[in-house]
Length: 363
Length: 59
Image 1 (cartoon, each protein chain N blue to C red):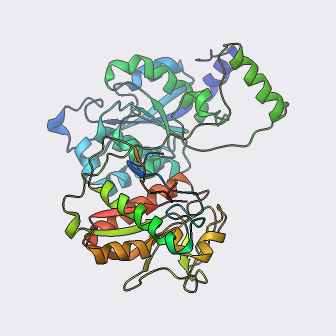
Image 2: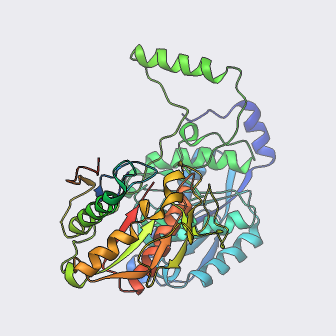
């Protein structure tokens, strides 16, 4: 995949090498192991540790003007302080590109690399890091938009990681357009970019199909969303005493939609009181979901959220108590990032309210 | 989908009910679906598992 440096580029690079700042942890920065993990952020002029391998790849087309080194614990424990120090260093050196890591599957190092890249991005400095796709730092919401090249779990993969990192860093430093994740090799960020194509969609689809039928390699233009797996919750032990809450993606709201929840592409959830209600009447509740035929739910909202049935079961003693709050989302065209946030927020709320089990009705 | 405990619903616009049964029987469908959901909450699962509802109206 690596492109060769053409004579023209070599000539240009001799005039104006790309200025790089490199971020490392205390171990790769040559300070020491775990006993030095509390070291605060420091800046060294020039190349340190793995930077030498990058430097060799660039052959003068880019130079590491400074290396930021921070202890793993320091970054994980004092993120605000660490980010301020990284910011000062980047403002002082004003590099064309920031390279962080590779961090492999080291969690705190991954956090540091991501923090450095976020600071760089805020300052308008193209920033890139490399680590294992399994690195816990990448599960954090704020790190989802970063440019990250995949590596192996351990530093065994350093030799393979460096050329890819050097190549893409050089492109970023030169402000060259960056292609898709599949073309450039970085981890997909869930972003789509409009492009012009000389063939129509129909022509491209037929060409893809022919390749597939012929057993040739092909690549769909539609990325298939990969959904997070969630470990199953433990079963409810004592249903007789359990507090059960209702959650729905069916968009049943108080009549008139007082919170103006969107009918599509939802950005918010709401909890509404159902305390003392024996059912959801069409006079008081209505569906605002833009993705299903609402005729049935408009006539009786219990068809989407069975409050009446659960009240009957509550009276019968089939479970402890129905929670006073009904959680409402409008699940149509909702961005996965928003859905993930709704889930996190609602789960936190449910836990605080001592809810033991949830029935989520989905349309 | 990656939900772990899934009770098979009736139709998208009325997942826990069935407007085609006689009106006096419709609450019975909802109650059967809700009762099954409560039961499923007490069952251990290893991953996404679909549970059906044994009720003539819940199909």
